[in-house]
Length: 444
Image 1 (cartoon, helix red, strand yellow):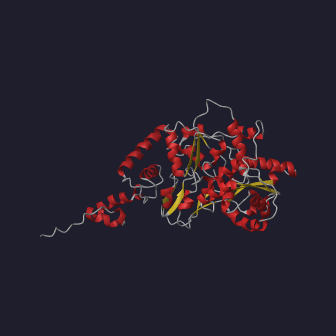
Image 2 (image 1 turned 180 degrees about the vertical axis):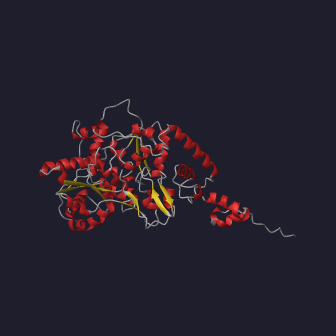
């Protein structure tokens, strides 16, 4: 998998902020610089938000990529609409995208409405696992693949609205232009790094269906001028989606579109992890549908968005009041059925496997547990790992040395300097607490 989240080493100062916030413990700090363990990264973008030195970035396409194709199609995520104030119709944004150089547009929200129609019209299946978990957030899907494999069967079909829209847009462009599929470039406009990764390394597709992905923040800047020029002018009817599709931009909108009665909508990666732990433990049996989004307020809180997610949600709800319920209608037996049937089922990704040989893995587990018991359990991050458990694993797996722990340094210094002076070699927060003598009470 080619991850979109990358580190710029010349900016990194080894401050350990990222390792303390990564939800999958995918980051380490070694030799004063952070590194990412690629098999554990889910591209959630948390490190992009918290890095105080902007040393973490996401690789995405620029507008020069359009020159590689004779015909180009933009597939904007509905979260793009929430970035603009006083927006009365998506047609203004879609027409402005054409002014930027795209030859056609096809909304991801239209793909969302088609997926909604498919999922709500399926016949009842008593063997279908309950609760069913949404697959719309790639970061959540990857989290389940590496950390909650027992819930893989609960995931909805792995076809993103963006992917469905991209496939249908390419097929439509081939019919209308007579060009070959290779001459047509289909680009998504996305709110987060996980969707950039999904464009090149999709979970449910054999091969990528998108030719690239642009960040909303880059497109937002480019759209301001053409939108101002087109304001107040008659616009072509370009939008293919209504409220049902636009609502997928924020947490709870997908459940609204599904008309789910018993559902839970959770946003924020830490909340998602807690909810998955409860589902795995069987403590949420009454919910039929679980909507999980890694970002606060769903896609409106993506790391590529420019607007406050709560304000963006307010704007989206206002815009949705001006839209019809739906414009893209699913029809049983259509092309959508074939595309969903061809998606791959999610598979477990053994990221945390210590060794393919079970006997060797058990021996490493015992060594990790023994070392962890000798560590202070403070989660201080001074060793470059997010926790003492992760540090013990790094030592056993050969990614770190025991001497990287500052408390192991204290033990070594005690042998050299004696107990009383050993703490002088440590930073103040890690020195042992000393009892300060109190003055005797004054005599009456």
